[in-house]
Amino acid sequence: MIDIGKILKRTWHILWNYRVLWIFGFLLAIFTGGNGAGNNFRYLFSSNRGNNGSNGYNPNFQPGPFLRALTDWFNQHISPLFEHPNQYVTTLIWIGVAFLLFILIVGLLTSILRTVSETAVIRMVDEYEQTGTKVGFKQGWKLGWNRRAFRMWVIDLVINLPVILFITLLISLGVLIFFSVTNGNPALAISGTIAAIGCVFVFIFAFVVLMVFLNLLRQFFVRAAALDDAGIGESFRRGWGMFINNWKSAALMWLVILGIGLGYGIVGMILFFLLIPAYIILLLPAALAAAIPGAIALGITSIFASGPVAWIVAILVAVPFFLMVTLAPLTLVSGWCQIYTSGVWTLTFREIKALEAVKPEEIPAETA
Image 1 (cartoon, rainbow, N blue to C red):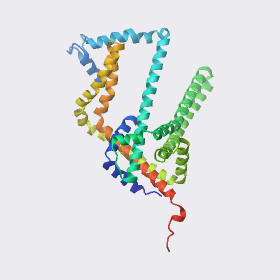
Image 2 (cartoon, helix red, strand yellow; image 1 turned 30 degrees about the horizontal axis):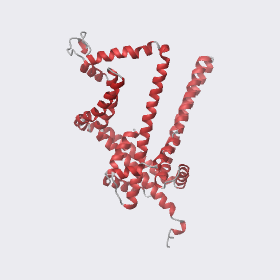
Image 3 (spheres, rainbow, N blue to C red; image 1 turned 45 degrees about the vertical axis):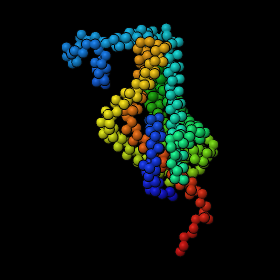
Image 4 (cartoon, one colour; image 1 turned 180 degrees about the vertical axis):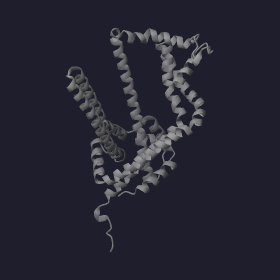
């Protein structure tokens, strides 16, 4: 049986004494995870800011130049797509394809950076525990950027296949409900709808249980790939064997990690409000950090498009950088939690592996 208390204390020591890990934890946190605004927007871009009406409405309101240009562009290029969709089928298809490609590219880059960062954290913790050596960011990145990270990425892809199956089942149930309501008799439609809704709840419950179990197994699969340099199939076999032979220790550690996660969720909500002064202080640096990529996007987009389009693209590019800097304190705390959780599982993997390496005959017999 593993010593859970020892693992938790040792991981805490590593977290606070190995500061380079914080950078990778920050990356993990980034890549894992009203009306008042409308009024402020109108106030910002309006050329007449007087308030001569009731409830904040000004009958003499005149939009500013940017808002007029944006409205004209929207009416000219976007409104016809919704008013006469049959005339713009090809355009809508290309928009959908472009949006899908954008989502796929962003998702692929995000998953790669997350996997590389996680691989680096796992191997850095393991090396520090084994030799006491601390490496810098460059060496840590090299520990993450290799074929082991690719194997971890494939393992995650295989584990997430149930998500695709679950979505397919939900779509099938939705189609079944639609045809039972539209084409069937009323009695059959009602019974079919009730049965389908019941199946949805059963599928959701089974899906949650399955994903929790797969997430537990994943901790062993990915560490077999990252630490033992095992192939994809071998990682599944080794991870499954370690879990089966030590399922009590694994389940108990999972419960401990679950409790830590729940505690962090409560603390995180409190910290979000306590860190508001820090967000305010970081507004100016965030604006400066977002201005550079936003200006680059504006310059590039201006070559192909003009008017509001270029500004919209620039804003969309700048906003993630602005939020990343503004919310950096909260992201750092989330990164600590990511490092600690990963470190706990890495030390758990190491201790289970060490226990399995001890043969029964090597264990000293108890003296009477």
